[in-house]
Image (cartoon, rainbow, N blue to C red):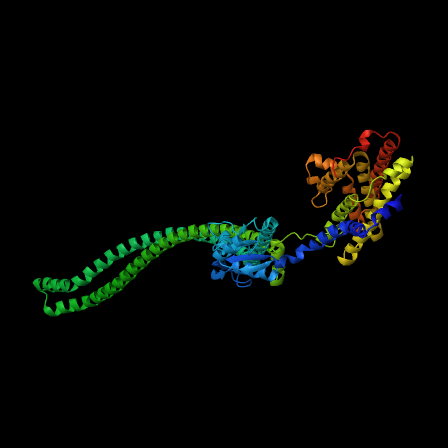
Length: 612
């Protein structure tokens, strides 16, 4: 029956051409589609994109480099992040970036000359540097798309802008972190200097505290001595005053005696004259009077000499009294001064004690300051410009994605290959049943063996399907250059899948005729959307997701992925087991239909088919 069917298919040149064409359907479908989509990402640099840079730049403060006393010195520098971004985009060659004005970009997008436009506005740099001012706000990157040109181009534009945003954030973050780390380095240098100063201050404070203790001891001794001096000076002042008072009384007596002696001395000439007169009046001769006066003259002389001595003594006594008064006055002043000195020395003693205590506190505080500054220095690690650059890059982009693949598809086309190879197998079998007869009616009439009839009707398209799969495998491996971790296993899955699909479409044709053939097309559409060949099947609506676990195409896709990419061979074995169930079930169902046809044919079986 198989040979008869093949002879029928190749009986004419047109039949051979039709058979070859149908065998080539999956090869053309799968091969051409995967060739067209083998690596579209590699062609992105040929996608035209308009780039508009309106950024006017902005002034940005900078600080002095580390080591210059850590002082932040404002210096006006100009940054132009828009131009940096444009240069990076053009050098990156992710798309065919074309610099345009706003008007040119709008026209090009409207006319389809570019797939989307990216605009860097005039305040781009100003916005990026606004965080340091009092009006921080986000910078904008404007994306404009035109879905009438290409919807996926719009999606690519959104992804491109997100990458631009990420790279700009990293660049600006790295610069900001660099300035921050430079500032921290300057602060550390200042802390080192401050620590040295605090150490010297601590040493000086300790020395001062030691000296103040000595000063306090001396001040205490001074206070005790001045207190004793004050007491002695007070006693001395009292004694001196007594001496002064006694000397003053002595001087008064001496003054009166001196005055009397002076009066007596001053009266001698008058007394001599009075004596001479008195003697003359009594008739004493002049000679006798002269003799008497001569005898009296030595007494006068002695009296005058005594007066001189007395006057001298009086002067000495007066000077002694004046000196004693001066001494008494001085002693009083001394006592007053000594008392003041004692009071001051006591105050000095108190102040020295306070100074001693204060300097002790200062020394302790200076030690705490020194230790705190030293701890601050230790908490800020020492750095170099190269280290700060690495630190800034790490802060700006702290997470590095390390990706690994358990199973890896080499490119976009290889990622789609399992789906389109499985779909091609269904389409190839479906096309073959356009010319291959599912069941030979002569065999049904002449034979009564449903198993032989069913196997013959299945093996013919299954063998042709195997040829299709071998050809498709050649296209994938040789022409398109896809690699396979398990090439023989992959080909085996493709052949099993083709045979399974042949059994399914055979069963539909046996039971429903041309309507079954149409249902094969409907079933293909259902599997097209439920197989999970492009998006994960979990993204499907619930009813379609349920069908994913039932229909065979999804299992073919999964088995091919495991074998082609080097995945889980156990999963591939399970997928093949499910396909085996479908194959066996479809053949059993087809045999049941053939049995019905061979034993219980009805008039309905003789009616012409609804389709064709």
